[in-house]
Image 1 (tube, rainbow, N blue to C red):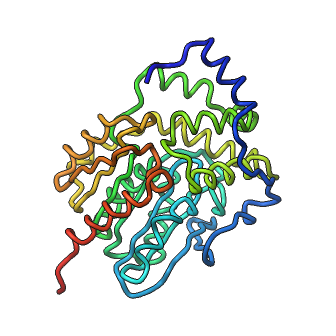
Image 2: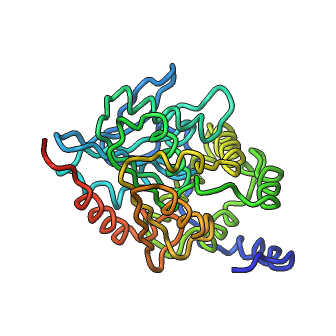
Length: 312
């Protein structure tokens, strides 16, 4: 896919006004987000981290959402594993219902909250499953708590190399809190449909509705700061120095039509992590959990069965 020219960008802006709209209901508070199942909270360094927990005696699976999302993004995948596994989902700081950070945002800062949750809930033998930013977070957690992580699943994940120079400069310069707070709803939808999603699904619509409703609400500016600052830090995030130390069996899953994090990053992760395998999902974009959830669930199920620990 080529980079749009200025006339093309002007046309995109015009088309944004005609884009099909998702429901946008400004939220009085992020706690008004509608989650399936009862959410819980755990204190990590004096701040509340939101999560859901199916309970049960099975090995724990912890799902970590992508940038600008929340734990509901896993609705079409995570419930399929309840019963056999204890299924948990977490909101990153400033996202979903988790409290924001007082200081600077960045990949390491938001990852610390997930590490704190893993410790607080004593999640030994956990399988970490992260998409995009969530994958980068999972890589930081396995680096810091290798003894707790049994398996790792990286879905179109951050961490396989920094963003190329000029594009990184563009993101740092223009992707500011003010931009995220003020950009037209239709342009957000159009960009997502062109570059992030391959299909029009209920999950994709839910992701956009939650994003735009949060932005339009009373906590919109705080949310814009969280997502802008995290993204601008993420362009430099590169887990290469510790990929060779990852001992957990790892599944690298990538949509073949991901235009956000290119497939070279998938190859890099799969080649550098010692016990890693790569699965490419056909006709799928950057967020398989909403774009092609059935294919992702099948790949995940196959991996979990193949890498299941034998009984003691």
